[in-house]
Length: 150
Length: 86
Image 1 (cartoon, chains in turn green, blue):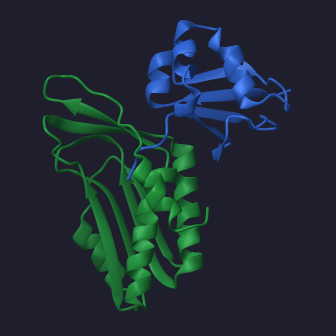
Image 2: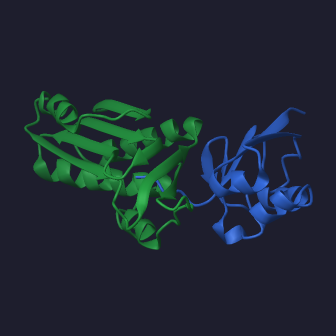
């Protein structure tokens, strides 16, 4: 198994520090994805709720699948919850490998599967005080399914 | 028999007005869908939360399962909309 760091937290994170940790592994290839709250016309913030007991298990499962499929030396997954304003970081996925293709593909696989199998729910908070639960997107299911598995 | 803890998330939680409910275990053979039918008559909130089954997802003991799954020996059932993380 690769060196694994998983954090599910309300606190912000520093992508540079997370990348530096992956760069200290001897692989020579590091890839990452950072997801942020998008300024979606009048949006003030997103509120993220999750199912803690299941979140840890689902992330561990997804990482185990990635590790079985690509030769990974390190994986870092960070997912925030709570109220996150526009521009705030939500999620970070970083991978380290001896092969750039493995690092890049595993990173895309991990974020695609996180979106459809980690138990988080987003609610919008708008400037006028309104808000609604975000609907799941069918294309997210399609993106995850194209990797096969699960 | 031990009880069953039911957890609600997102708009399912909001419609029901509580995030958790303890019930007597309904028996291993009862499916989640049949349990939803029984719970739906408890309150208007339950009925509203469970009305659109196509938008409802479930997990038994922290594993995703289809709604026609028997509850079996599970101790925790979670009910929620399709996930929207990442």
